Amino acid sequence: MKVHKVYKAYLSADRSIKSKIMPEEIKKNEEEKIAEPVVVPEEIEVEDEEAKKAPVAQLKSKGRRGFGGKRGGRNDRREAEKGEYEQKIIDIARVTRVMAGGKRMRFRACVALGNRKGKVGIGLAKAADVTNAITKAVEQAKKNIMTLQIINGTIAHEVRQKFGAARIMLKPSKQGTGIIAGGAVRIILELAGIKNIVSKIFGTNNPVNNAKCIIEALKNLKFIEIKEERKDDKQNQSKENK
Image (cartoon, rainbow, N blue to C red; front, top):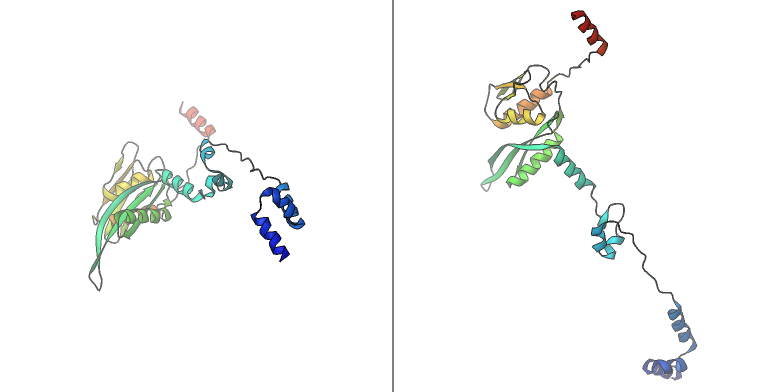
């Protein structure tokens, strides 16, 4: 009972009375709490002006992944790919599929992708929305990118290709001719970086089939090794001509 009265008096008394009534153990605990050093937050070095305005908790989370701790590698890679390749839409069509409950409508997009330096590819995808179909087709085209050899702005040799009902002929041409082609064939040749070529479509006018046919034709082109003439040989030839 005496201890209970002492604690009751301790809780209700002022700070001046506490020191007189307070037991020795409680006194020690209070002294230790007062004696504990105050923790000062560490200074964080900030270089960017945008980071200076950010809260301290966000600055502490800054690590190898960059400001705010977010991962930016994948996004940077996508931005680089967007800048490297140029895309053009070959065809967009509304397609229907007969189901048990009726018809299901979707959109089909055919997209060509290229960097105008010998890399080109096409993608075909379907989705419920046009924008989703285009994005899916672009991702598909990135997976199907192929490289071809361009010699003096044209192809190495003549090629004739058949794909389904589509038949296409490609012929190399001299400088100044330009791209003599139309439809999907012209789009793919421009994105591939070919500047002088003559082409002809003999079969169907379906742009999707023609696009697939031109890709197969470019794949069948043979790689030719270009032998560089030495300067000594050129000088000898010029002396002989004189």
